[in-house]
Image 1: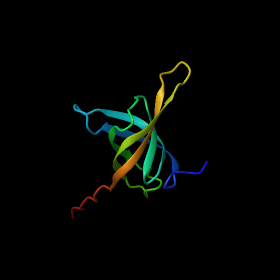
Image 2: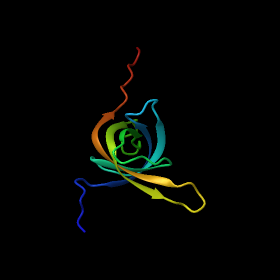
Image 3: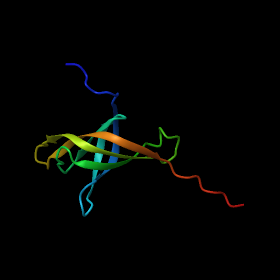
Amino acid sequence: MSERRASQRYELSLPIMVCLAQQRPTQFFSGQVLNISTTGVYFELNEALAPGTELLLTLSLPIEITKGQKVLVRASGHVIRVDTKNASGAAPTHGIASCIERYDIIRPRASSAVA
């Protein structure tokens, strides 16, 4: 079977905050990124989401790769696939594959020095 992905995936374990874009009141879920690329992200949540659900995602890049600065990635996309993972005796987790339609890199502004 040939690889269908358009961009390379990177194994990366990071916390992620997920917001359901079209739902009111707004719901937020915390999860864990398992891998990421410029066009998609695969993460785990305790909640199942339906394919097609529009998402707003926020994650913080590790300071080891950002030269000690806090850098956030904010992205929008939608759910492509959901994998339910059953751990024996525990509540199931859900692997969520999401495309990334748009993303922004957010860096904190340098504070002004007061003389």
